[in-house]
Length: 341
Image (tube, rainbow, N blue to C red):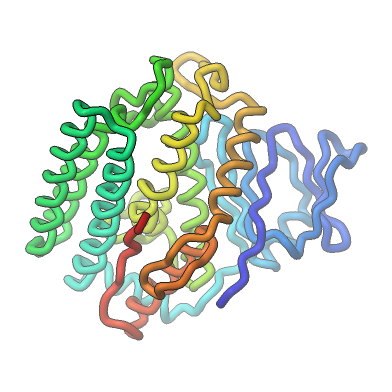
């Protein structure tokens, strides 16, 4: 079993330096506020504007610490990944697979995991649903079960993508029925992005971005290229393979987390602010959500593929490891992560 260190989140207007294997973070170059041993850090995510030193960049590159930049509105800017890990033969196999029919089976299992986990999230919402909500949720659950059956016979990637799109449409059509708040400013309404049109979508997109970066780090750990995906087409600057891996975890990691926060009123409309068409979390709200998010990833859950309990933060790494084994030819099929409540 591999060991995962911590993720360091850095707020805007910070100065980051590294000295004697220690990260030092301050609001300016003279006043050091925080000292963190570099040895405990796996990944760094910087929000907004921050100044970093050349030595910091060199240290992260040499020690394979992924540094990612995200805007205060949750938009992913890019990452410093430093020295490539893994071997060129594995990446070559990954690129060759892109042109082969076998990739359809991997894509099918990405989508299978997504559909199954969305159904599990809908089922979990039935516990506290009133009669009208329960009827709507059960109707969508039935429709999505049909899509899972249809997926088995899908022979090409375009058909699989179509099924994935239908599933997302069905799932999001009842998302508001899982929210038990009277604050209209926290309603979902519909899935919107680039930019998100309301507070609920803003926090979903924010956490989807963080999860994507976690998946990118996991894929790089096992020597894969996070930019060459199979479900998501190649697009300059997009972490397409990381986006593929995220699909299995959207409902069970992010959606479940956000729905729980909203229903418990841990996040409310007062935690957001709007700038023109863009919405962002206030600084204190962002810090609170990041703390709750990291706590949730430390929770242990059953990993069905091994029938063992692990902290949830390991799951994307375990799936990335399986994906690398399939691409390398060590195992025949990619088993998706299927959530069990």
